[in-house]
Image 1: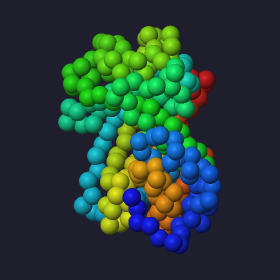
Image 2: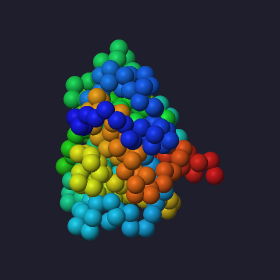
Image 3: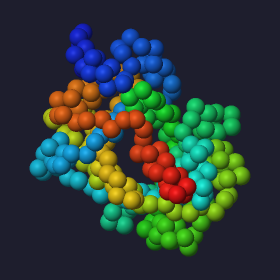
Length: 261
């Protein structure tokens, strides 16, 4: 956990950014939610050289490509369901079924191997349940290129999560959207005071670019982590890019707009 102190120098910064004030009941709800972890996220306006500025000249940047699998009208995303195929480079791939919501499956009991996390943005908290699995490169390419339906490669827990959240849509033919190109770098603790922080640059299909600073922590540390994130952003002159949302929700919104045109 983060070190405890009596004063809260970051509270004003966090509240100004949009996180709840220190005495807000929202923090107690985060702790009592039952999630395994919390990820604090803030979308940022891109700045030249920001990655080097934050992680140092010797920081390692990893490039990943994220593909979204959905019906042509993005019906799964409308339900808060994402099926994501990720290319991590060097023939490393994984597949994730992620469901956003308080009760992602009937009965409220998530499948085995699922992970429950809170995505906490200024003014917004999303509860997500996900099951991730590693895919062999050849099989991942078959899914990406449409030779194998993604349903054929889901694990039993992934299939259960998808079916529970999407019902009949779980068996629909799913097309591929993307990729969303993500350049990710870990921000050293010595620079930000946080043990699990990273800076990412997102290159959306169509040319738009955004950045994100995020930090993962235990639920009990969420309040102080939010304060530390807010202070770090203010200290480094990083400008938020509201309205606050996740990269996936922004991406699916862009995809919907493109269909209407």
